[in-house]
Image 1 (cartoon, rainbow, N blue to C red):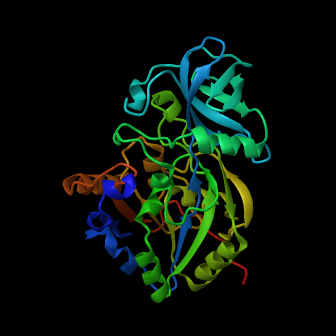
Image 2 (cartoon, helix red, strand yellow; image 1 turned 180 degrees about the vertical axis):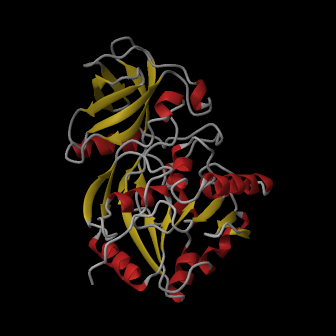
Image 3 (tube, rainbow, N blue to C red; image 1 turned 60 degrees about the vertical axis):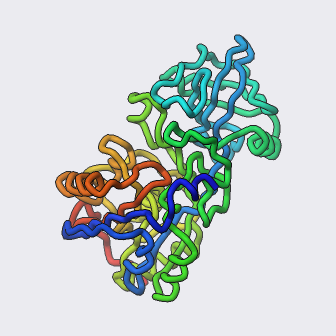
Length: 353
């Protein structure tokens, strides 16, 4: 697999940023040794859709690329929020891609075996609501036949779908990989189990990381649906009662758990929608630490980290990541960021037993 070849997992690095601001540069293979018995690790088990579709704007005959970017409604599985590009492919930097042909409501798109309709052009010429003709099953069959994973210019070789699936991938609902989970392997999971560190999953429809347009990027992340199983909620509750830490594998897990949090810090099971940004000043009620990739200031993922640590500590962490040569793409290195004490923490009421 390209993703496996792109970064030798044994050479991957992990910067651990402790709650007191101390930092350690470690091999990522040490991840299985870092947590305490009773702690709970929660990961996103969403599989990644082949969400990039090349085709033709039927009214003018010009080439387009559609990147599915969000589910408009869980009850309408053939309707999506989408980003539209003109001709070209991932080998061109996203910010340098040609604009699409002018789009209007009702325009028809031929995307391989799939036919789609522009329901509405939103307040940006590249942001549309899109619906596919036919059934949900026919749509997924067409995506499997014609779609490709969304990818960016730093990986020139075309990615196969299995390149962007993590080892715990389950339901295909994500538009890009929940890439923090690339750090997980069976040896790490076994080490946690042996040391009585809990492991649970939820399913969050991770969205796109870049649109190539600063105005659109400022809106990321879009609203994202999630599902949290009853068994995961039960594990979270047990860890909280013990006073143990909840560690999120990726920003999508943070979004889901915090969106599902009650005022007392407990978590609701079932389906929900994570809306808005978690950022500086956002109070956290559930998550104590996050394992994430290497992100740059201004990116929505980096903004979420500002709920865990102040700007001074994040600046020092960024300097350390640069000094150690950490790799920043989705197949790159990792950072474990522990939440600073008393930083943007919701005051919970007593939790029920």
